[in-house]
Length: 293
Image (tube, rainbow, N blue to C red; front, side, top):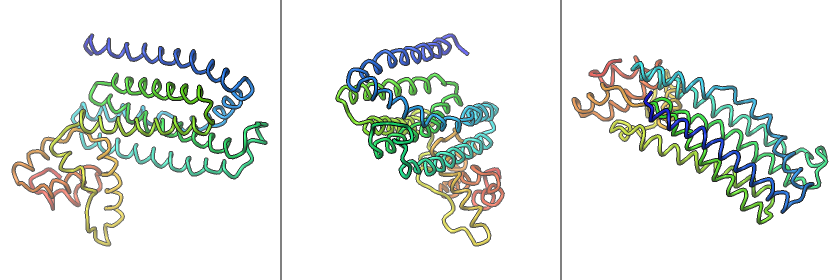
């Protein structure tokens, strides 16, 4: 690792600590001044209520990004694709399931259970939105960690610092205007969603640019799977969709196949087969004989 890259990584860590310090110095005084000690205590209670969702973050993103980086730097692109795509599907499953279960807060009298003066809907909506943030942070962490694959992990740190600073600034403005807790929590969730889109665009357009990826970006997978392979085809489509979100630089034989055969459709199907190993033999040799199966 170069000294310049070490310096960048160190700057990310230090700036992250600085952002956290600034947030802790600015937000509490504003909340205390505008809401008072009692209501600010209710905000802290609501924030702590959903903290249990953080236990769902058991390091899957870190492990997956490390494995993808190992496979990619060994030249094992297909294995990197499989790990990356499967991890994203697992995360989406965890986040979706937890979001559905957490929606049960709207049917519970949490304001009375917690002894809060805030009305029931505000308490339930705030808890749900704060919970979505914790779940969304899992996906955002996975995206930010993807920069590790190509040795620029500090970029993910920059994204995280900018997100924290932006969300905190918007929270301070809403708190200064004495906005409802629901609006504050909604703002934080929306800010997180916007940054997820921004980092996703940056990953695809700036970091993993490739002619093949442009060709593949609108192709969901096999269009007419037979009855015998419908389940396999659907599973491949899911993993292909996941891979399109976080593309890994493609094997050279796919680029060569485009120039040699001019058959972009065959390369699409070959790429789908490469995304999930069980489809490789079924698709690659039949549709693109010039590419390894």
